[in-house]
Structures are given as C-alpha cells and as structure tokens.
Image 1 (cartoon, rainbow, N blue to C red):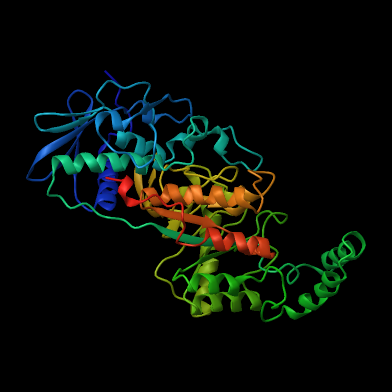
Image 2 (image 1 turned 180 degrees about the vertical axis):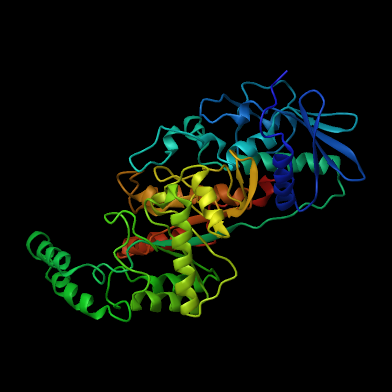
Length: 467
C-alpha cells in the first residue's frame, strides 16, 4: 500500500475543491476513500469518481519521478493533443486506465496529485541545482527531462477528468472557457538615455561615434537626456509605451506594465526612480488609457518578504499621489528570481493580488503545468494563500536571444511562439507573454511582437478535435 503523506490533508483537499470549482464551474466533494483512493462526488447526487491516490510520489521535492504515457484513443477517450499523454509520477499503467464501476468510474492515475505537485511547485522546494541568478532552471525540471515542458499537462489531464465527469453526471453543465492572451511588460529600462549619468552618456556617445560610426545616435543621446525631465522624450528608442498601448487597444486588450521600485543590486536594478516626474507622468498616462500598473520587485528582494512589502507600498503610495486607483495589484519578480515558497509568501504578505513570475528564463513553456490562473498554495506550510498565480508561458528574450533558445526574429521564433499559443488554445486557456518595452526598438522586433500578440492565429486547433 502506498504511503499517504502530504497532499491528502484537509487543507489540500479544500484547495483542490476550489481548483475544481474554478475550472469546471461546479462544486465537487473530495474525500480520501479506502484502498488508497480519492473520491470525487456531488452532494445529494448519485455517482462517484475514484482516483488512485499517490501521496508519497507527489510529496517529493525532486525531479527524478518516473513518467508513463497513456494513449487515450485505445480506450475510447479523446485527449487535447495528438499522441500519448505524459503521466508524471507514474511508472506504468494497468489496462484500462479508466474503467466503469457500479457507482461511476475509476481512474488509475492520481490526476489531482499531479495538480498539487505542479501547481504548488512542490518540485522546487529546497532545490540547490540553481543557475547563476539563483533560479531553478527549466533544464533541471521533470517536465524538460521528460519532454512535456511545452504542454499544459495539468490542463490536459483536467480535460480527461472533465470527460469522465460528463459520463458520471451527464446533465451537469461544466464551464466553457475561451482562449485569451495576456500581455505584460517589465519596465526595466523605460529610457535608453534619460536616467543615466552624464559619464555613462559620454561613454555611449563615444561608442556610437568611434565603434559603430553612428553619428545620429551620438547626437541624439544628449538631446534625449536633456529632454527627459517631466516626460519621456518621444525620440527615445526605449519609449515604446504608446506604441504598445495603441497595438493593444486595437485588439481590445489591456496590458500590464510592472515598475521596479527598489534597488538591492545597483548593477542589475533600474536606473530610474519611481518618484521622477517623467515616470510619474508615464504611470498617469498608462492608467488614463485603461492599462494596468504593477510591481517588479528588485533583484535581491525574492528572499526577503519585508523588502517586497516595502517596494509594494512605495508603488501604492506613488499611485495614490497620482490619483491612480486599480481594483487589483500584481506583478512579476525581476529576472524571474524565485525561491519556493519564500517568494510566494513575500507576495502574499505584501498584500498583492497576483503574481506572474512562474515561467522559466531558460526555456518557454508551462512551469506550473497550466495556463490558467489559480489560488496560490504554500507546500511547506500546507496552506492556501490570499494570492493568485498567473503562470508565465513565454518571455521574448527566452525565445530570441542566443544565450537561451536563440531562435532570432524570423520564422523559427514565430513558429515557437505559435506552438505555445496553440497549446494554450487547445485547452481554452490563457497565453501569458512577457515582452520588455526596451525590446521593441527595431522594426523586426515590432513585427514579431505584432504577430505573437495577435489573438487570432492560424495554428489554433479546431474545436472538432476536442470532446
């Protein structure tokens, strides 16, 4: 008999019930049953779904779990993607995986255990195999090692669970979701020249003139520096904010702009201060156009909840002074630095409504196994937090830059972004994209962004492939 350890506790089951309510739009009761099973039922309605309960496997904080694969078509069940469906944590399956019982159906895989393991980021707790920025890298993850990083694996298994629910309760109306795109921009460098000291401007001018033979940029630098007093200079190459908002508004999208509000590592944090008149004016303009302002905590804040709280309060104070009021506040960690669950609790203790850090820097894909927003859960304390997680699916430099995938600005990059969008569309989820304002200073970058940020794309899988 498998050992039942962590995630079958009442707090975890309550959290999972909320997940099911949000995903399917109906209330389900979860109860640990006999024989290492988890029972899914409806109050005062006949029928039960039982799932294999594997608490020991999904309590592990490592990436060495086995991974089986299931071919649903052989058993007469559809899956959202072609081919076999990866099943992290399972070494093998008996046949059939899903079978009818006298009271409903039995599923021989711990789907909700997988959801706990992926969404809580249990895999990352206490890890020491980190990159140079102290981040848990994609290449160390179970998803990368077993080839499913670019699939929303939790959402795909929830699709299967939904099919079983319809068999057990055919009159039950489950929620229908719609594919969407969420665009966000980390404001690391709002101006190429405006906030740099004159000594740096001088070195930049010398480089333009002597190395790059770019007389135009050399002459522009001091003009833009002097002209960035109360507003960002219109000719600044990194002042792409109005272009970004124009693009979004033609597509009825609302973008989010996350501002750095502290300096814990001068060489890696911003060169601007939130109180600067030009930054205040930018924030007012973003708000007036109906877009969102958020927090981008400084480089070393990810391990200190007090620092995150202080920077969040600084942002809210400036917003109040500028008459900016929003129904919710969120953002993303600088450099995507994250220590689970320390950073998670830092966001919650800062009173933030959501975080959108959880994507990998070195590879695009589904770090949480999902492209749906969900309530945060601390796997160490074993409690749900008053914070929402918005998984990040792709960052532009992850796909484009040579230090990561290095796909450039052409068809290979477009294809990769479209593959990720298609994966989100197949489960009617949300494609969350991070694109820095400073990475839109050339026509090729803007052309790629326009394609990627379009809500309509040809690679979407037709509805007829889903059940």
